[in-house]
Image 1 (tube, one colour):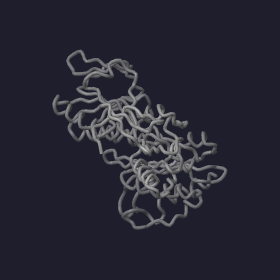
Image 2: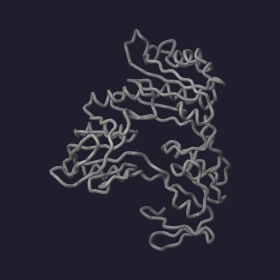
Image 3: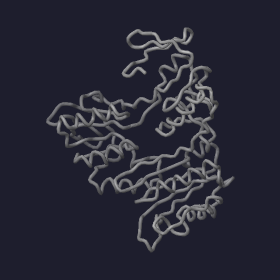
Image 4: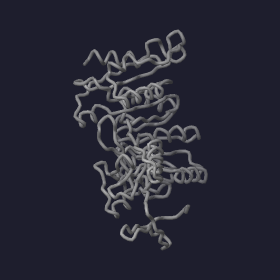
Amino acid sequence: MLLQTEARAVDYEKSYVELAGGEKMPFDILMLATGTRPLKPDIPGIESPGVFSLKNLEDAIHIKAYLRQNNCRKVIIIGAGFIAMEMSEALHTAGVKTTIFHRGALPANRWDPELSQLMLEELQSHGVEFVAEAQTKTISAAGKALLTAVTNQGDWEADMIIAAVGVKPNVDLAESLGLKIGPSGAIAVNRFQQTSKENIYAAGDCCESFHRVTRRWVNIPLGDIANKQGRVAGFNIGGKQVRFEGIVGAQSFRLFGLECAATGIDEKEAKTAGFEPVSNLVWGNAIARNMGQKKLGLKLIADKASGKLLGAQAVGETGAVSRVNALSVALWAGLTIEDTGWLDLAYSPPYSGAWDIIHMTAQELRRKI
């Protein structure tokens, strides 16, 4: 194993990898796990000292060191997705005043606006400032503060800025090898993690996955997917044929006192995939009423023509992740909204009512179809 070693180029015809030091390593089978690259917004000053992106452990170490060395007390986060939500909590816990800039009106665009509104209220209740419809024009290192962000909403001073606007697959080596790149912009693979060249495999964030709901190949860069693909690739390289059966897009994060989770697809993705989506959102209790109140919102999306469950989103004080996990299994199995409304779930008052919010939301949606 060679750590801290860059693979600079690959000569496929001669079957060797050229390392940064000029050494050539031969191969019979090549595995690509090149991951992603953080997107950097096209903003003058984005390369200034004190401006970071966060994609891996090394980035996190650099951020933590800079915070400590410069005694940072004010941080701006550009973007309002997963990384922004998780970083806002981490920075708040460290006693750092945090401001989020977002081009939209609400955080976490994948979730329904009602659910995102609850996330916004959670941010604000913990002193995280959320600046909606904000477009950063320039970042300046001049002035009293270490950094100044000039936006359409005014000028904001900060000790650090974190750009958290997403990632893209790192496919440079794949393209140099002439490998097929899928419509998602990631490396195209088959169910055995083979690329368009039989003796080259790919796994993780750099490649596509088969989405069991849309029946299309997509790129969803998540650690659990990467782990499964890596294991499947390893089995096949080692001679044991194993298929990666796909994903349903389940994901979650914690935001202070909230659980936030989603699986499957939303209405926009459903229309693109040829479905006729119908949906509903129910606010309820994650536990039985006689045990108290734990607010939980659950949204379900289904196909009007077939009744097939297409997706789910949940946000609440507790129980959001467990509900979405159950609904991910339903999506994996291809259940209808009718099936979902009668699922046999583990009932106990500390965890749900006799009729769980899954049952109630599914049965209400069934009446719409």
